[in-house]
Picture 1 (tube, rainbow, N blue to C red):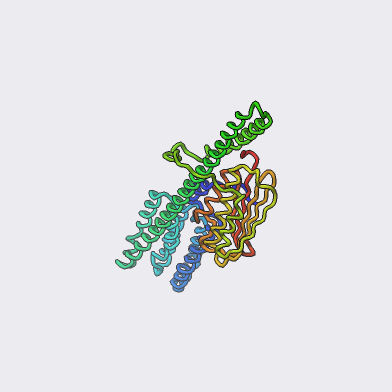
Picture 2: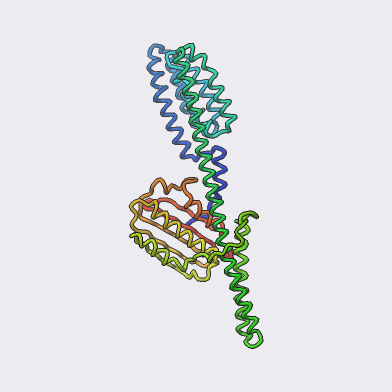
Length: 389
C-alpha cells in the first residue's frame, strides 16, 4: 500500500537542477552513443582504410567519446570538453572525416548542457563550440563552415527548447498544486463552518433545557465537545494549506458542506449511467471518520473514477474498495482499461494525479498510482485517522 508520498515541490526542485532519472540517463546514453558510433564510427572506418596506423587510434577515440556520453546528464561541461578534444584529435588524424562529424559527440553534449544548465553556462559553451569554425572553413570552404555552425546552433537551440518545455511543465504542476490546495482549503472551511453551526444550535438547546432536563443538556454538551475537537483538527489542516491572502474576498460566500463516503453509492451510480460497470466494496465502519479524511477519501475516489472515464482506453469495469482499519482508511480504485499517454504518472503529467496526491498528503497520508502488470490502472491511498481529529 502507499507510503507517504514525496512532496511535489521536491521533485520539481530536482528537475530544476537538471537531474534526470537513471532510466532516462541510460536511454539518453544509448541513443547518443549509438548515433556517434553509427555515424562517426562508420566515417572513421571508411576514411581510415588509407591510414592503417592511424585507424586504431581514431577508433579508440570514437569509443572514448561514446563512453564519455554516459555522464553527459550529470557533468555535461566536462563531457563536452572531453568530446571536443577527442573529436578534434580524430579530425587531425583523419582529415577526410568532416569536422562536423568528428565533433558529433560534443554537439550532443552541448544539447544536453543547453537543456539542463543555466543559460549563461550554455551560451559560453556555444561560443566555445564555435571557435573551431575557421578550421571548418579551411577544410570545406563556405559549405563546410555553414554546415558546422548550423549543426552547433541547432544543437544548442534544441536544448533551449527542451529547457523551456520543462519550465512550462514545472509551472503548470505548481499551479495545479496551488489550485488544489485552495480548493481543499475551501472545503475544509465548509466542514468547519458546518460543525460550528451545529455546535451553536446544540448550545442553545442545552441552555433551554439545562434546568428542567439536565441529562439532555449534558448530552448536548458532550456533542459540542466532540464537534469542537473535530473542528480544531480541521482548522489545523486549514492553517497548513492556506496563506493569509488565499481566501481574500471569499468571506461572504455561502457554500454547502462537502460530500463524504456516505455518498459513494450515488457517485458510483453517476458513473454507471455512462455504461461502466462499477463495483463498490466497503470494509469496516466509515461513519465516525474525521471530516477531512472522509472528504479526502471521497474526492480521491471521484477523481480516480473521472480518470477512468477520460483516459482508460477500453475500460468496461472499475472496482472501488474502501477499508476502515481503525488507525487508517485505505482506498483502492482499479480499472481494466489500457494505459494511455494521458495517464502517465511522471511529473506534471496531469492535474488529476497531482490533486489526489496533494489531498492524501495534506491529511498525513500517501498515494501511489500506476499501471498493473496484468493490465489496468490502480490508484491506492492510505489516509491516517489518528491525529487528524
